[in-house]
Amino acid sequence: MRRRQAEKKICIVFGTRPEAIKLAPVIQQLEAWGKPFRAVIVNTGQHRELLSPYVRLFGIPIHYDLQIMEPNQTLNTVCSRALASLDCIMAAENPDLVLFQGDTTTAMAAAMAAFHRRIPSGHVEAGLRSGNPESPYPEEMNRRLITQMATYHFAATQGNRNNLLREGIDSRKVFVTGNPVVDSLQKILEERKTSSSLEELVQATKGLKLLVLTTHRRESFGEMMAGNLRALREFTDRHNDVALVFPVHPNPHVSAVASEILSSHPRIHLISPLGYDDFIHLLSHAWLIVSDSGGVQEEAPSLGKPLLILRENTERPEAVESGVARLVGGNSEHLTLMLEEVYAGGTWTEDVKRVENPFGRGDSGFRIVQAIARALHVSAEKSPRESEAAGIDSRFLASEEAREPAPALPA
Ligand code: UDP
Image 1 (spheres, rainbow, N blue to C red):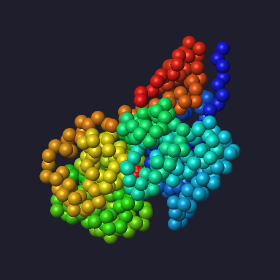
Image 2: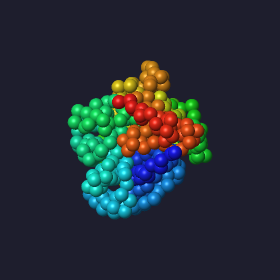
Image 3: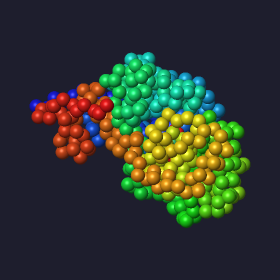
């Protein structure tokens, strides 16, 4: 006779768009697994307007919406408001595991809320390190603090795992799972849904070399961002077969300088931030991507697109080592030289199409949930057929004949 397992409540906390993109595949896999997992999903609302389309796109059910965003919020107000609200949720729900992703203030507050309540927790995208606590700021420090407070660490790459082991983290608590951004991106490409406005934009730039730009990081604000935007405008001006598309982040540090430097040019398109489906499809049409975003460094290799990284350093060296990305540094003259080098030809834009994606194969959500099941001693209660359809390894099935030890996940 099948014995019912005690329910395992997994509290998933996010508050910004990259967290929604990267936790959606984990939530979908928890749902696919079914009992005894029960997901309790918390949106802190660290970003509001930017985030809601992602929640809708991935169909994420929100159980708690903390709406912590305030005008002129500071890191300390975000942190204290998130921590206070999350503490109430921890007390009310008493979950078996708290799950968070990445390096945001939301993720750091969730790790701390769980730690203070002595609730086990898991960190998705663990082990990224730039080596400089000031850059990216405050993300690098958030990552280091989260590592100290989390119980389980889901590292995207072997390099990320090595970073954690060097810091003395117990190797049995570190799982190499790939990055779930690859799962989300593949799903979007399969669904092939784009808006008519994106189709129009793609048509308008057809036949031109399409350069897609994103920049909104704190470290880029000010003269560095202005210099980079001037270099990009001059480059687009010099070459009449180049079009530049820039989905402009709503932060006034970005939107003001973008409209000052890049507006009123026939081949430069300043547009509102795109939904994930449109953004990924836009990237898939790119000749070259220029960005300071972290997620885009994982998406470029997933799409086989060349990327110039507008940063001094990167915590994703795999993108550079694989040959897909090149670091520009903080100097706009260097950006100009690199843009001209790509324009002059060479094989880079073709070579990147053949690079193996260092961030995974699109099964990361599944691997993370497998690791959670193993850590919490959970087996699937679905029938073998349902489990197979959901992609659950047969050794996790609850039936007696399938009660072999859970598979060791690759280190
Ligand atoms: N993104 C998007 N629409 C846009 C620009 C970016 O959907 O107009 C996505 C992008 O694909 C990436 C994520 O937003 O996955 C990156 O978010 P952000 O740059 O805010 O954070 P970071 O990746 O730097 O942590």
